[in-house]
Image 1 (tube, rainbow, N blue to C red):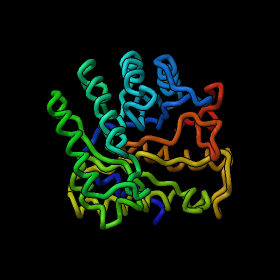
Image 2: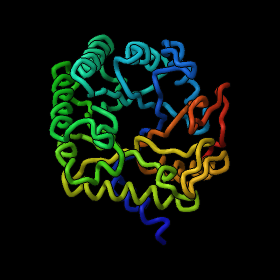
Image 3: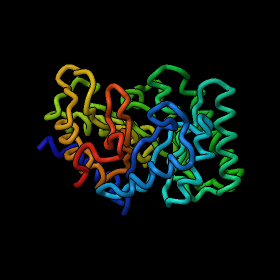
Image 4: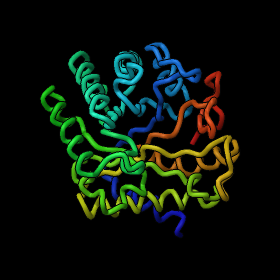
Length: 289
């Protein structure tokens, strides 16, 4: 019964919740590379809501880049969409601009549109910062939000599951209100028939570490997906059929037991390409669960 063990373990850990956030990761650029305007964000948000399953939340990677929050927040409010906000931490100038962009929209719109805030994204995986520095930045952003009357907003970090199980990074776990884990069996060279177990094993590994460091801290699934096209990675083959199988097994199970942000809504110009809608915003796979 190993197939069900990881999902059941995770479900037990979050059984007290009666609802979960579910949405997609969204970049700040259009497929042609231009920055998204408010109307482009509204198109993304209404597209998500029109898909099977009704997705009314999204994860953004940055706050200031391409005026992300300045354009995305009014679009989110207009469409009743909630946002997991990203704040880039790399280099002091960029970090200051990210904080200023978040501060500006909270001052203008309040914080009811915020799901949570992730300070950084896969910084530990890339080795771009130290755990101590990142932990300090998480506290810094939390303090800023508290000063703006948004102290109830959860502040955490998103990184790969391999970074979270690295004992050198426990200071970041201790600083987080939530832990966002990214896991891709595709990049682990896993066949789709084994991908379910591989994915849930990564989640269980992260939860075990988090619970040993800071008991009670929730682990959110902030990135996973399967490509429709791209390079074969060992036994992992991109195809529409394999993307469908991964969605039907992993996504449909996760929606019932975890906060999850799927990768990704639309990326048809990328290689590999994971998008669940094509250039015309039509689904690339059957999203019904």
